Amino acid sequence: MGSIRNRIVLMVLTAMTCMAVTGCNVVRVSLNTTLTPADVAFITPGHTTLTDVVTKLGAPDAIGESETGLIATYRFADLKYSRVNFGWLAKPWTPVDPDLIFSRTGLGVDAFQVACDPRGVVVHSSFQRRLAALPFYPYPF
Image 1 (cartoon, one colour):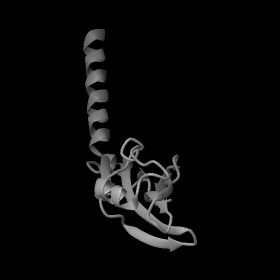
Image 2 (tube, rainbow, N blue to C red):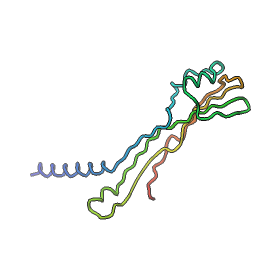
Image 3 (cartoon, helix red, strand yellow):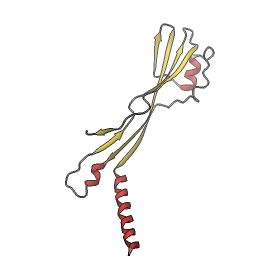
Image 4 (cartoon, helix red, strand yellow):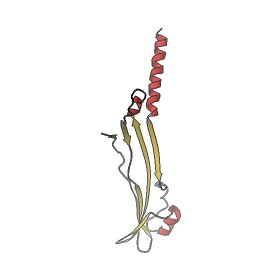
């Protein structure tokens, strides 16, 4: 008798878990080619030229002037977006479809910048990162 009750409880918990997971979305978004330190390891300040960088990494997204030369900027993003709609669980029992969404996303763009002297020789290169740990924002609260 206890075995049948345990099976029923297990089946109900499994069904509820499956319904909850059905309301989850996870999306990954990539913009431009994501650069890593290994991708830019060939850059040696004082020896590598902007032409070498463009040959390996492609055309930069922006080139600007500074007092000491040029700055080439490569922008990229690798975002993960996830959300859980707890209101979806009430859908079978109510005529209203409430949206009770908890989501997390990383909005912002990473960048890799290369600074060159007036002759086009790299003097400095660095990554600019967005905020690493983003908080959860309950929506629509």
